[in-house]
Length: 153
Image (cartoon, rainbow, N blue to C red):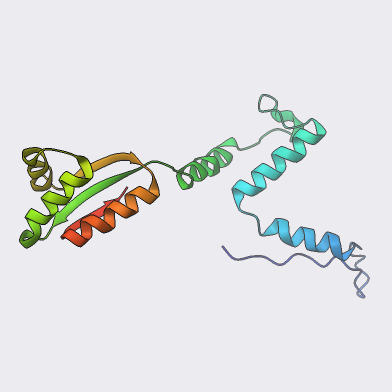
């Protein structure tokens, strides 16, 4: 998304009577323009909370007609970005490395030989669910070293 420059804060010589503002205010305005939607929403919420306006139940505080769908979409996007639990999915494997992959799956999941073999042969399938990102990345490296194709979802 391109950043649109702010109008000048200094008085213009053309007689238009521009707004005269301190450099600090100009810097603050530039910083606000570069905020993400989620950061803008949080800023608006905090300012509204400070002044006692902006209750969720009362849309008349800002003249009504507010579009809460955009705010909800921004919050949902933020929730997706802040995920803490991931799934490790086996998408395939090198046929020559099948035994190595089965052994590594057994070590990762503590499954029996038969269950690990069925899991590998049933690819694509989820190996582990709801694990931390760091653990998922570590297991991905281990499985790929054994010849598996893995993705974190």
